[in-house]
Amino acid sequence: MQHLLKTIFIFGLFYLGVSTPLFANEQNTDCIGNTVCIVGERGYHVLPPDEWDGKSTLPVLLHFHGWGRQGPVPINHKHIGAVTRKAGVLLVAPNGLGKSWDFWQPDSRDTGFAKAVLDDVAKRYPIDRSKLLVSGYSWGSSMAWRFACEAGNEVDILLGISGTLYDQTEECATGPVEVRHVHGLKDTVMDFPYGPNGEETGPVRLWQRINGCAKGSQTTSKWNTSQRFTRYEWKNCTSGKAITLDVHGGGHWIAKGWLEQQLKELLGNKAS
Image (cartoon, rainbow, N blue to C red; front, side):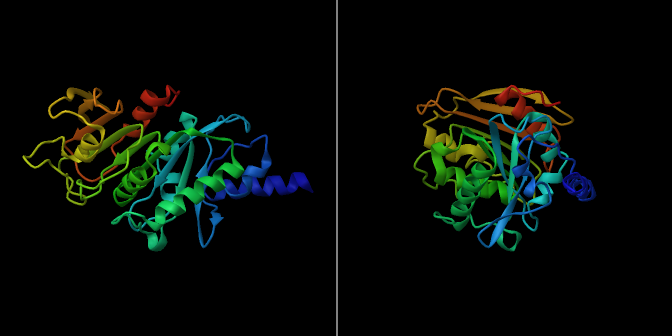
């Protein structure tokens, strides 16, 4: 009977479109992929990496979905979930109320919710809180910025994709250990936030200010996936924290290969 139930469970996962490995501690399989994990009046979605042994400690990528979406979208996305599965990272995707996020003002209700989600995840999986990556796309990227602003050093790395806090004069007590952001120059949904004099480094000027990065202290380089990126890096800020901005000539999208490349650089994983 137990074998039959396991077979039904596995079939259900494939029916939902989520290919998920079996783990040594089967208590973790009660909510995976498209199946919501309940926290209070809403919940989140989680996707473990393919080769996880069911016991080893996992780094976490907390990813906030875009406007009008929910957690299953990044879970099933070829440039998010498909990447974390190969990279040895536990993907956690909360659901926003009304398919949106509250990031406009400090003390966001969604910051508290996201922390409750992480506490719940810690009950289900052996997570490494010293390797907390926070990401989001579009509206969700702005929420990721808000979370990083309010959680500060609790966040190891912020990975923003095509969305910032509009008011880059906001005050954050501190910032994450490292910031990485990508944005398209032709973005007309979350417009590219140029600096006051049209500088392409404008999207991260909030973090430059908070980290004490001298004006013009960045280095510039080029790299590419299927897109060409200009990379600006600040490594000598008074805070000792690093900032990276990748700019491309496209619009409002999740740049192919960008997240995969960041995880390779940051975690030294086998993502490919």
